[in-house]
Length: 189
Image 1 (cartoon, rainbow, N blue to C red):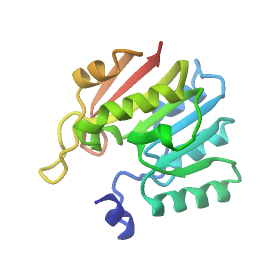
Image 2 (image 1 turned 60 degrees about the horizontal axis):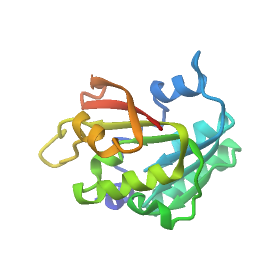
Image 3 (image 1 turned 90 degrees about the horizontal axis):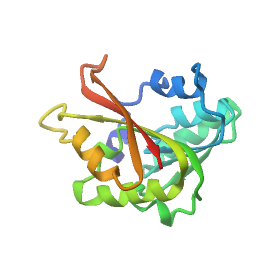
Image 4 (image 1 turned 120 degrees about the horizontal axis):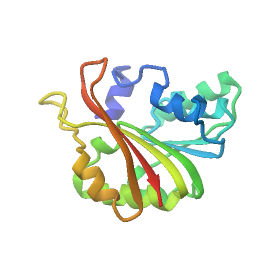
């Protein structure tokens, strides 16, 4: 479905602007020191490029080749050295992206992964992250329509990440786009 949506240029999730929640971690009063950043399900690379512009060694992963091609073009145009990889986010260990990431971002990827593959996703991001890493995850807490069955609840986040992550904060509700979504800020133990 996502490949077709990119092919036809229908990307309602791609606003081309980094969210204030990410900006707060990078530029806010308690900004994190730049390190390695991983954008999981990066799409056209808006957030990966943003992180690279702010001194992060940023890597974006997505399974749609057209999205990655667009992301590479954005990075080139911005003059930043972001790295982009085509791959399955439920098989991060097979991509050779390395570990030690201190900031991870998921803007609506996990909620789209079938339930049976979500533990593999959690295992991959955990293996890629450094102790103390911050992970921002955004997901629908109720499906936006009968056509899109994406959903991620606080209970699921707490259960799936319990072995290695602490939930620092969960917030949100109705987003400006009228989607019932929520942010989750996790920190790696």
